[in-house]
Length: 132
Image (cartoon, rainbow, N blue to C red; front, side, top):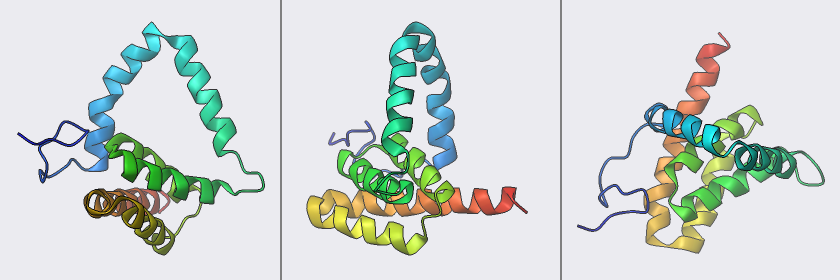
């Protein structure tokens, strides 16, 4: 059987963002308990890399989304689309970043790009409904 990097069969319906988060929650907590220094170090590196500088956090999240599409990483897509919403990224900006990922990745970009857009839409909807 032909599978994606996520382990799902190619062409299979991939989980919605809340399902991906739920699936990874317990294993991530277990791993954090086993290697706390590594996980803490990764968190610090992530905060430093995504902090605003000459490049805005919003732009960095768009870059991260494009890389997540390239790496075919649903967990990364979910994480960075949620962070993109918090950084004020628009749906059009995400779509244009997805366009670059498609350009650079060809066919796989046309599969994981729509997944990223769906994850962004879910994060935006969750953000809008929690602020109402």
